[in-house]
Length: 158
Image (tube, rainbow, N blue to C red; front, side, top):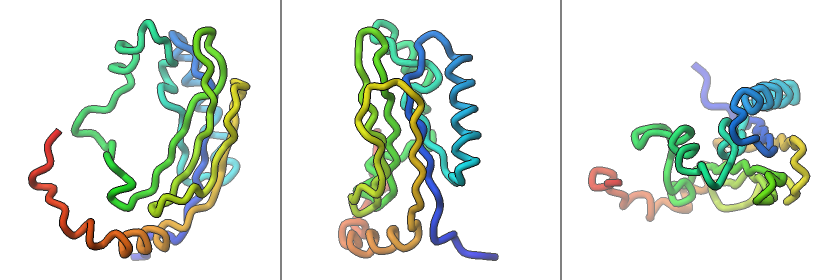
């Protein structure tokens, strides 16, 4: 059995998903995933609300449709647990709000490893970067060791 890879390539696609057009948004996502795979991405990240789009008048409905369950894989407080963060943002103008992108990959020690520019273009944009998974995690966890050793997950509640 081999250990965890020392690096992985992260790919981010940012664009403005169209509210009420889930099929179109899914097609854009599928094309983005294929394009990022062709660019060598091992991990692909899509924008928030990528499937449903963001319509302020239907935000609650769309949020419920796209939200993960409480018991799902969403990891809270990633930085305080010395974990990688990948933030993919929407970009473009949907007629009432301009989204500015600025997607980024943040290392467990808080360093911004890579970022897309803040832009309101609405065009699909890509970020592909290599991250030193094991090395950066080990260093951040060693540095945060005192904090992490006192955690009490048995008393955590939502």
